[in-house]
Image (cartoon, rainbow, N blue to C red; front, side, top):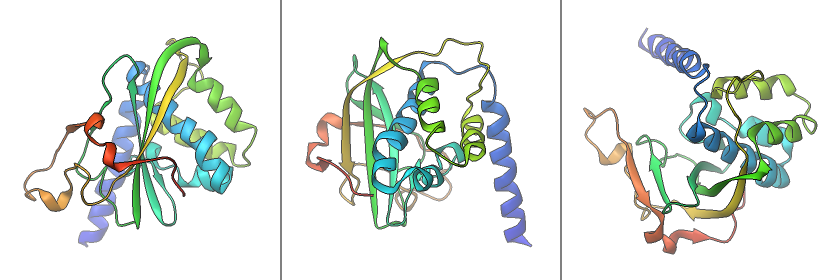
Length: 204
């Protein structure tokens, strides 16, 4: 039946992404991405909903539409280098589209700093605070992290965190905006022009 075939195809694509990402290609961009998601989990989500719920809500490693899915809202995490203009790349028409009541964009401005933290530092900090360590590491491995990396793990300093309310007026491309024959959409948002959507904080 068609639904079974769809489920099989989705599972195969997830495994494909798992194996493709499970190599030693864990460069600056991927480290920044994981750093942003782990920082949000550790410092924002866990403080509001607890570590166990924050961990279960983290679906970015499962290649879902957004990085975090909570009961009433979804959160997409983005990072950019502090030395560059605050532009973020949206890699699909679904990243800023959700059926949840609210969708937030959390953006981390990062700089490489030897006095900062690496993804491994944050992982160790989270590991001692959760019960289901195995589930946590499964998500890390799916993201492309390895405990025995042969690559240098950079240390980052968070210079700024910006929160945006992604409502109907926020500049975005969603599945309902494009022809169904278009399968891949990737675009860049200039955050300097999105001040009207800025929030001081978000409630999960």
